Image (cartoon, rainbow over all chains, first blue to last red; front, top):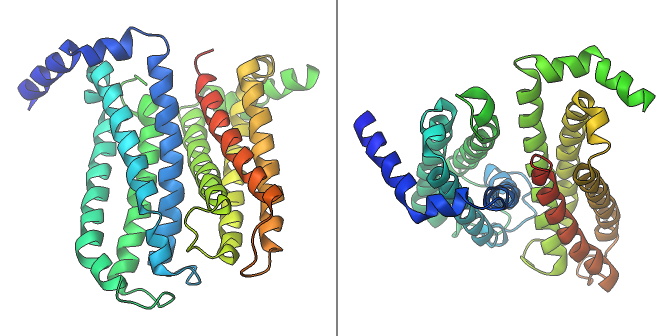
Length: 167
Length: 153
């Protein structure tokens, strides 16, 4: 694992992306600003969707809630791309930080939870009436989504303080 | 300046500055409150502008209330963070621009919440309400960018 990470880090810092992120004063703050903006729209859209999945706000039709999905997906894509920018820029700091790995583990958990939603929950709830209560699995998936993503946010913000430094 | 120097010298400010848990716990809560307030506000503003029109306008009130809870978390943790370096923050133009924009953002939410509430079911939102929602999106986006830049300038 260490040998793999070492060669991965060597490759990351050898790419032109590394230079792009490190050699301009505005690169890092720009990536951070985009990362923060997209995390806001991701959490905002998730709060509306997941609370409805859990069963709150049943006056919102399930189909309408679903119209927020593109916001969540685009927001996540922006965070993935800007996040990769940080890793290409400074892989050593992140890979040495346990809070980074905790955050990544939670991103993977959130991804698997989304897969569960996509394969098991969505096919069922599109058949429901607009204001019907949601099944137990939908409630669980909605609650787990909020737990995982707020965990991602917390570990992300605590990264510089919990692990071995870095931004 | 007397008050800010006093604030910075309090035990609370000292706790934020130098304890292990102080600064990190406040900065994490600050991000959490930000995500709730700004995230929901941006989505609500988009709804007011006509996106996601399947979401009924009368469902927005509860999200405005949730957004204010986020704002409360953000404001309280932000006050703690401010106390730690009050005298430097007050002369930092990036920080002061951010504060002005956050205040403006809160004013837009305070305007939009009752404006949406008093729109009759099925009725159109007024052009003025939509204009405020458009301004609010710009205000929040610049506030986030300024907040991030506070760490650099």
